[in-house]
Length: 77
Ligand code: FES
Image (cartoon, rainbow, N blue to C red; front, side, top):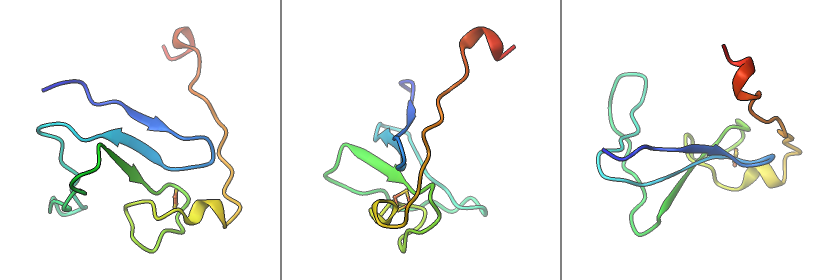
C-alpha cells in the first residue's frame, strides 16, 4: 500500500487522498463509507461539522483557528 499522508489545513480540516486500502473506521471498527468521485477526504477537526467525522465547511463560520505546524524533525526525538 502506498504511503498515506494526512495534512492539516490551516484553520481547517485534516485531509488525505483516497488510495486503495485506506479505511476510516469508527471507535467500534465499523467502516465509514468514503466519498466517491472525489480524490480527497476532509476530516473535521473543529468539532462543529454536522457530518462528523467529515468536514462540512462549518470551520469557516465558527471562528476555528489552528495554525500550528509540526515541530522540526530533530526535536521529535
Ligand atoms: S474542520 Fe471543517 S467543519 Fe470542522
